[in-house]
Length: 358
Image 1 (tube, one colour):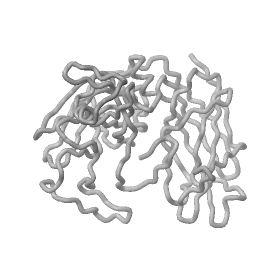
Image 2 (cartoon, one colour):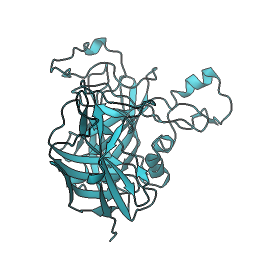
Image 3 (cartoon, helix red, strand yellow):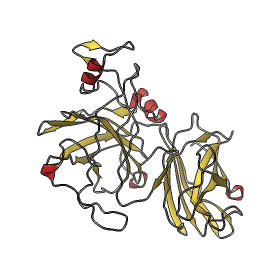
């Protein structure tokens, strides 16, 4: 997975990369300030448990806001196996998006993610990817979390290990962030529930298992069901739901039909599937959390459930701006001279939805 401004190609198995976190470190009762930290001390601080909130140091401003405004909980659950301790440090849930931080102790290695394919992983051709036996694996790397909520355990998740910097500029080590961005809202989850988290660790036979209490502390959400349709040629889309919380903006829509192509998207170039930017009444955009890009011909039907950053203030209206990216014959994407993806907006498909609060 990648940051929200980048593209994720669909694959059956792929190593995950991360976002970053940091925190003020405390060692032996001495708080490290913004002054010089020796290399020996800095190395020692890597293995010191993080004190306080994790999310307040995250690069994601919405998680920072959730942490500093009391929308997260700190279960501080820990399990130790074979000298390795994993802890669930902090949890955030706003009805749409669920994120939690995992801290690791007892491993002398900054890398948290397993370099070994998980058991049963397949390559793009459907063939099993070989992985060394458990006893030959270096101990302490973490595989993608297995999360179960009310019997469901297949979620679209992002796993990251770089989660920010402390006020004194030190990287936070041995903490990872797992985030679910799709598939929760339609479950109509209660304000409080338990989720089960299983973490497989290399070199350790039995998984680390946690039963984590989750609370939705985000109040004042705005939920709209416009059921509004816009079409052009063979393509149309219908906005089923818009939801605004202090942490997330969520857009749910269904589309059908062949994606329109411009004069520049012919020959060796073709349009991607349709994507959607959203802006407020003054044209201020909010950034999409993650863009998924299938490296193949677009389907003719999609159900989209997309997460964006929150608006700074509740807008009076939201405009949806559909756009396509331009793909080459090998389905790599066209970029400009600065390396930015080239977006082709379809103005005839723009839709404005008033935000009416009850």
